[in-house]
Length: 222
Length: 79
Image (cartoon, rainbow over the protein chains, first blue to last red):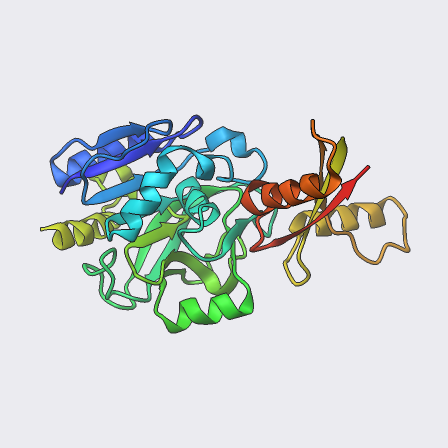
């Protein structure tokens, strides 16, 4: 599987993502700087976590207006898989590629811990290797992860099966509406999630739960 | 030309920061505070002199960057 990772000033989980992708796919991802105008040919483009532009204005707002975003939107529309993790999720909502918005955590504090996720839709290209209803461990580290969508948008994402992952077992760390931890676009080829699956992919991490997400994408690309 | 853009959260959008400020004001003894909503103010200086054109341009700035219209409203004041 060919992958690319977009890097912005202030990205800091890009190297975690490179490592996870190389470990799991066996191929080094292409790193793409935000000022570039075109993405390489890839099966999966990732927008990694971090604090692009210091979260100025709103988390992800400035990065979402970067030159490379134009091609990312075009690639997403053409059906390429796009995954945004943490700040990447915020950037994808700000860019209009995903519904809703990420707001300040309800508890107002930065949360850095492990949560439990339930895979509520295993029929997506990001979750096919999970069982429906499977509960798995995943780390989170964010200040603005409180997912919000208005009633009409929420109904449509729920009815269309766009909610892929929910916080389970009362571990919602940020007040996200309907416990939403990961949501796709209507077409199902763009996923945003606050938790970091790339940080639980080898035994040194203390678990392998996050691997299933990348293995799902590899099965789709094969 | 000077303009001011005021961005506020839409009604119905939870504002945890406003709630925290509301609680702190209560703690300082301001007992008649019913609610607080936090927003943002942008002071923008423009080179043109056509107010209608400026307003139209500022609306585009709000739609494209200054506000996230999923959760925020904006108001434009031109001096």
